[in-house]
Length: 245
Ligand SMILES: [Zn+2]
Image 1 (tube, protein in one colour):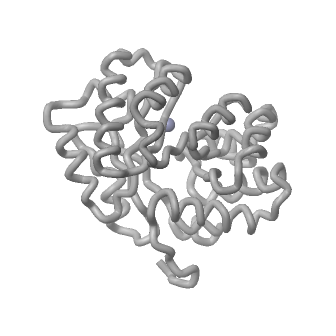
Image 2: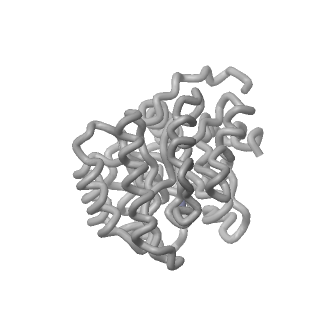
């Protein structure tokens, strides 16, 4: 799968989060340890918030010292599955505080919780001079503008290629070049022509093609820009393209 990603022109992979959640926080770190071009985030996903124990956040803080850990995420709010809101909120705010103390960027997951998510970010995050990525952005153009005004980055996945997703493509069109990222949300949300199948990093090339088209740039230019954005946001030193890793 990693070889296919390299062949498709994917320079970096950010392995997200904690797998099944606490007590294990290192699912992504284990992957990053094995491959030079894979980096990791650590963080308690809102739907895993009820699994937090007394030592969860001290373990999380300790993992931030790992050289391949580049961000805290996915963190945020998800009102889709009925996870108690107060528990999610506590885990979210606590992790924002940890990220601020560690001067780390964050990757945000938000589902059916837009207003509360933005409200928490405005109160506990904005103005600290740190980067925030809204992962798998599927909102409206207006919501995209709101995020951009707050200085956030938007990451687009396979949904942007779906025929009915014109509004998401319009959002992807208006994002300044230096605020745009591409992602999979693997194993979910594979882009056309793999829709409904298992998603994987190589498929990002198909999302890139569609977004390059609406932005009227070449896919090479989009790839160069999103790679540069990745290196900047996640403080990753440039790996040589020819380096076979
Ligand atoms: Zn998510």
